[in-house]
Image (cartoon, rainbow, N blue to C red; front, side, top):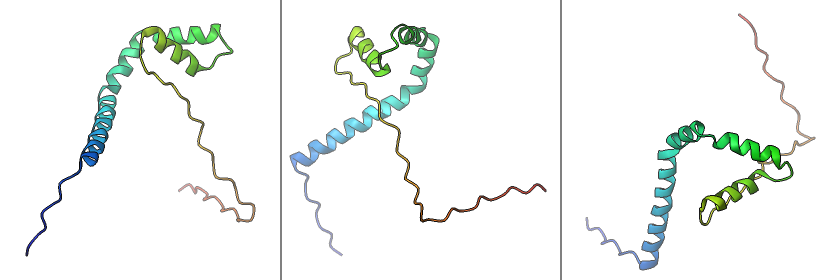
Length: 106
């Protein structure tokens, strides 16, 4: 049975594949060093200093404080965002409620 010879990928397809691989590598690096970074952060006074800043300036958002810290440290292209909590699906008033299962002790 004859098989077809695979067609070579175009330059655009290869560039897209390279970008995907770079993004996956960055995610892998974050996960690989996550525990170590969390431990180092807990050992330093960063958390206490952040709490002091929040206590002094109560009108500012936490993401603005993090952005200012990134600027002060010299991190280029830092973008701190806060996503809204996921919205729950609204309850349909026409749908009957399911009774909860009662726990019976043995």
